[in-house]
Length: 185
Image (tube, rainbow, N blue to C red; front, side, top):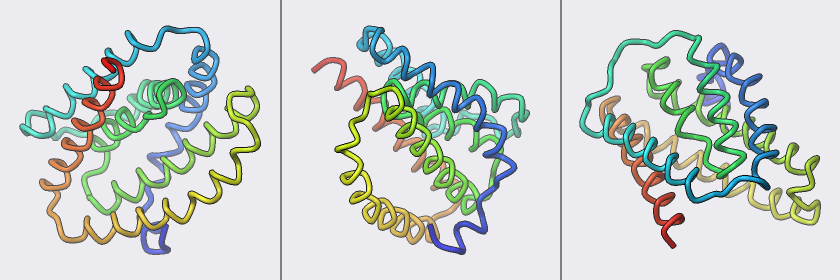
């Protein structure tokens, strides 16, 4: 993440998410080995698709939500991330209702996703769900992550706030659709 992007991170929005995100990751990692995946993935996919359609058809509210929503957003983001590796939708849904400036939203999501990913890796290592032999592969992927962040920064500069919400809706729709494909295959 560039210095300019780091300056846009809204830590005041991330910090309330962290305790419940960590709790969600711990609970999700615990449940990961015990729950049937298909019903959970189907429910998650339908939830994500519903919110994607709200963004795509502009039927979401513009009203800023209460910071109290950080509790269910953090818990569900951490839980879903640990169970399915895709905890982003609850975070995106919450933060798009808290941060209206697209540069700050993108930077804040990037910072949150980095922390969430780090929390998951540590939790999975402690729980024995991730072998230490995979750590070099994770480290080797870091340049790709930073390249993607840089490209995302360049793309977002040229689009309006409304286009950004459409893009978020599209990405949520693809995410939800890919979950359904995973369940059905």
